[in-house]
Length: 212
Image (cartoon, rainbow, N blue to C red; front, side, top):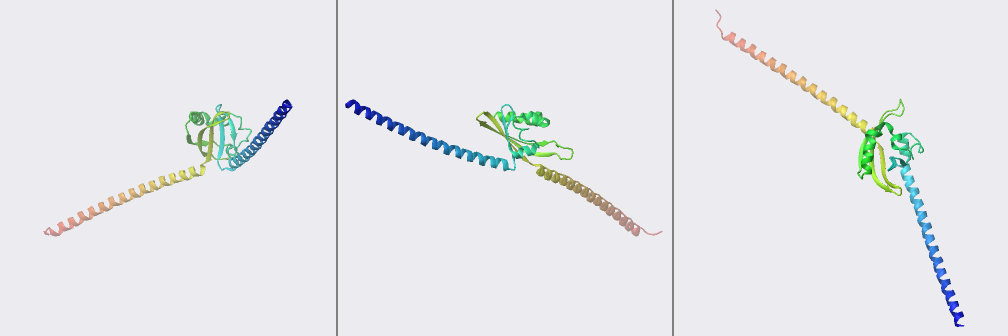
């Protein structure tokens, strides 16, 4: 009888342990489900923000390959996502890579925040050259070190700056020309004053000289 009671107690304890384990598994599963749902919502919001932002965003890995590019970035380069993601930066931006981009990417992978202005050549004969403000931000992803590339179109700002510069040059030229004209007018006035003074002096001398 004692053995039977002990068996019953052991079975009851086992059932309690199993029930507690199942409860913990259910709670943990529920937590994971909620966390995954929150993560999916967060990722969806992030995608919405990055895709609708008015700035180009890209992620470059340690092999200098694109891991991500949002729609504004692909629009800037006039390429599709497939033509950018997975490709080497050197191939995508060959005309400006060696001299302008690679040295700055190297600095960024060394941990430095880098900002600069970049002119991209015209993609078609009838299109104009455009200027961009570029920043490289060091970061870490699950696949290793990365550089986050942020690109903003600053063509309009550059055009305004260039127009302002040209206007200032023209204004300085006009000031210089006007200054020269005033200087010349002053010299003519001084010459006229001297001639008048000399004339009056001669008249006065003649008036004082007796006639023979």
